[in-house]
Length: 500
Image (cartoon, rainbow, N blue to C red; front, side, top):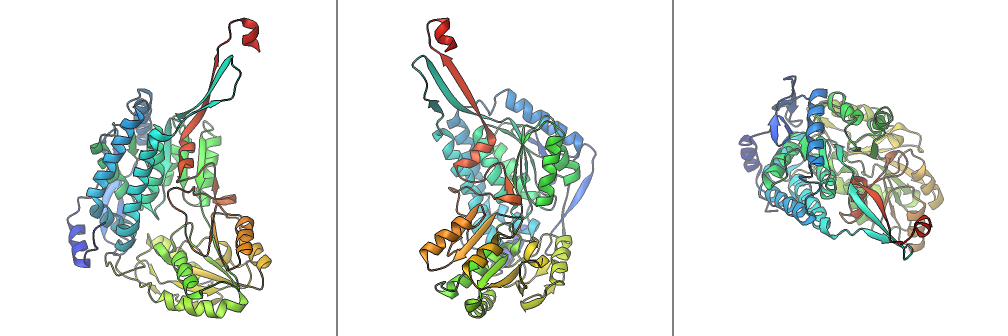
């Protein structure tokens, strides 16, 4: 990524953007069959960005039929793995060539800071697609142990037509997390971006077509959850769904599957992630920097955000002082200003939800101020025990809840006392305690003395109501988009041996 520009230069780019406003189905932009549209708004300014196709059942049916046609005729699913790789590498090249456009588009649509879009979201999305592309012709099938009279092959085959439903907090990156392994596996896709953030999904679909992805392989159907998401979940022509979003919505896809064709469902849902800081943690200033980054990065609109600080009473005061120092670096303002670290929340509705939690705060330690529009400054509150709604419910905003504990076992118990299990972290200088804690914490990713999610090589997903059915990232991400087939070959010369 090149050096960041000035605010004025980013605004000039924004003014010159040709924003997509129609669904992308069978290799072309198309209006909704009903002719209806919905309004895409810049949450930082309230400015209308575009009127976008508000699709419905008829559009989903059309997209599924074209995806099925593409899958069955093999224009992608039966293409040589090296050829599929080449197409995805070309897509990465085009995305890199248009990286600044994508970054500005993402910032305008979501309220995310241009700094994060330029330095994280766009380059990581390109890296994800390239990583999975390079893996396409390097995954081998297996031959299982069998008698000399048989050969038993275990092969992976693409699952078919997949429905991908992605959230609004990382629109481009979550799209990449899903389309990269799905396309690598040979599947055809019907993608639903969040209604709040549709622009980059449409642009990437256009770039994919330019890169040589056959028509019908990647279809983007725009609209609401009720009009597009539910029809995808219930569609008899879709073989599996991978969903990232809230736990409440994710559960609905299980119902949709049960009431339709029992399609496979992979869920990556919410989190109320604990960060445990023990009394022997080293370098509290560094710990504080990790806590602040984990809690307030992306305005706290992050399912893996460290939203619960479980801190030993002996270091609580010193740690909170250092947290207050680091929070000063997280300034709030215009997302197109490259110096800004905290942009706008994704919508006025979500802003109101986050503010409603702030009204319930028992003890405000710092922050708590809001600005007209959809801006909330980084906020730290202290709660008593683990029963407060601020300790139990996913706020999905820049709010850190602090819980004081007296020992290791109490900290682990409180950390695990949640319906979620996505991520957790523990800060301690004791190696045995660190390993015991990592093993004891019921979460899909546990970091020691840092905040993070791993990288493209490590699987990402949760325990309990944070999700199940598969993992994003790593080679394991391919598993959810493939099915295992056993091919049993009989080499025997007579019937008796064949029966055996």
